[in-house]
Structure formats: C-alpha cells, structure tokens
Image 1 (spheres, rainbow, N blue to C red):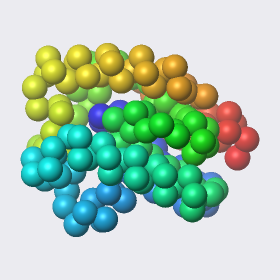
Image 2 (cartoon, rainbow, N blue to C red; image 1 turned 135 degrees about the vertical axis):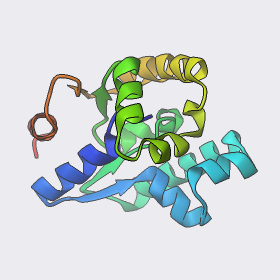
Image 3 (cartoon, helix red, strand yellow; image 1 turned 45 degrees about the vertical axis):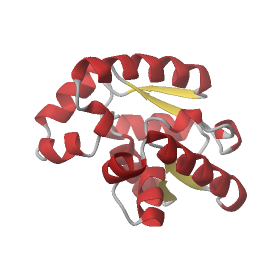
Image 4 (cartoon, rainbow, N blue to C red; image 1 turned 90 degrees about the horizontal axis):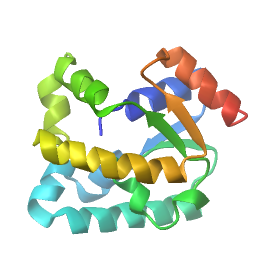
Length: 160
C-alpha cells in the first residue's frame, strides 16, 4: 500500500543476487491488465482469487526468491508456507506522505485503487497492519532506517 515493498525488494535482489518477484506484477502479466483495471472490470473478489492462485503457484514452483506482495496478499491461506514473512512497518501518515511527495506521485496513487479515499485507505491500513503484524516473522521499521539498513536488517534476520 505504498510502504516501499517493490523498492526494497529490488534493492535486496540486486545486493544479494537473488531473484525478485512481485505478486501484483505476476497477476498483471497473467491477466494482461493493470491491477486498477482488474479491480474496475472484474472487482476485488476476482483480484483476491488471482492472488490466491498466485500464492498456490509460488508454493509449488518457486524457491530462493524474494517475493514482494500486494497489500491484500495477507489474506491468502498459505502465506506462511511461502517463506519468511517480512513486514515493512510505517505509519499511515508516513506512507501517505511518501506517495504524495514522490516524483511520480500521480502514477503511484493511480496504481492503488483502494487508496483513492483517505478515510477508507486509513481504515484499510489499520486492518492490514494488524493482520500483517500477526503474520510477520520479521518487522522492519522503514521510517527510521535507510534503504541499505533495511535490506541488511532483512538479510541478517533471514540469514541470507
């Protein structure tokens, strides 16, 4: 939901020479549509079903890969079987400010259909944050660590 999962995954992948996959990118490739268009045309329930199908495929076919997940991916029933769950932790205000002040802010906000209304997004953040905190094996405080510090912390905790 804008905390920097993709940025962190790409940096980790480059530094530690591991493959990186983004579940939203996998779904977009399979569906040949952007996430926001999938939401608009098929709806959230359809998208969540695609997330579960993606999780099932990852569980069967993928090893040794850094996987960054879309914000709602915590709902898949086999998340803990996919590997170590890392939570990039930041306040809603920090995330909102990061998105609003990014060089490509309009694109970043447009990619997040559930972030279009601030009150709704805040409620969603609170719901997801609690769920992810329960599932997380590793929690990274992204507000107070540089990107390099974040990936080194993850590597240490995940014994990379």
